[in-house]
Length: 363
Image (cartoon, rainbow, N blue to C red; front, side, top):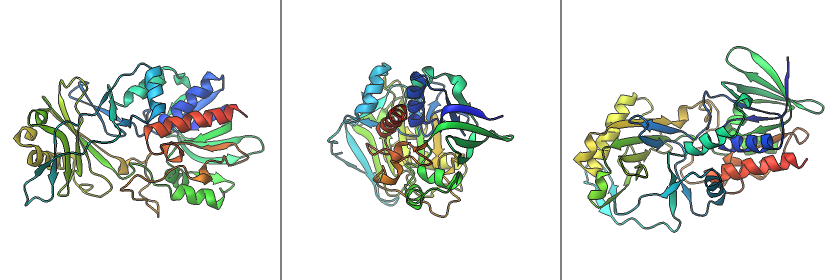
């Protein structure tokens, strides 16, 4: 039996949930199909040491010029705080040379973190969505155009089912959506090319977190910021909670393959050894460690694809070919990589999520 809806949103990340809420509030019958067993997409806040210390292993910050996320935080009364940056940074060239301290240039735009982690936004949005419309563990395999609707073939882990909607909003990273989903009829070449060549933000990143009794580095006049060419962590940042009841360091390994063939315990030992070398003996005995390798997340990145975009700097997002709906104007592209405003950031995900809902409701 085919299930029918006004709109189906593919992906329960930030942009998808924003679109779903707007369409639901307008009285539309919707479904959110999410292949993961959780909501949030690349928003992933790990709870370390019980629930005491949230560590964002996906997006972690926003900036003062990001107005869309600030409006959402205000709407839901979610507090935020400025990223700790006071003190010196640590620069480490190689293992044979001792780390050096340096004065960290102040950013021209203040950076903020969210109390409780970025997951606080997803939690707030979830409370406003009819959870009966959310289908976890439902992976979309194909989208087929019919006369006046789109058919969506979905695998829920057992058998394939056919769903139908007037509109489908695709929020997966474009490269993943191009290589994992079959489209009938075939999408125009310009659209396929734009999807394939849009790098997945954080697609090849590995992020780690270390939790301590206190942010001891602050007492040493350090900011918690560190840059290393020795690795494995390329950058460290202070990730302590807003009340500083614990200390935490966040590490980003970036777009390279270090440690992919190691166990989690082996990576943890290497990260702790590096933190100790850079921040001193107090870093040698963390209360907890956590990590996330986005490259191995099948709902984020397709390692089997022939073309694998590698990104070291922030790319230009919002490809023109992905701004126009396909399949008789019923298949919409969304997600932060599609956003022409602050693409790749939380702000971009919110902007495009709201914009697509408005465009659908205007029809």
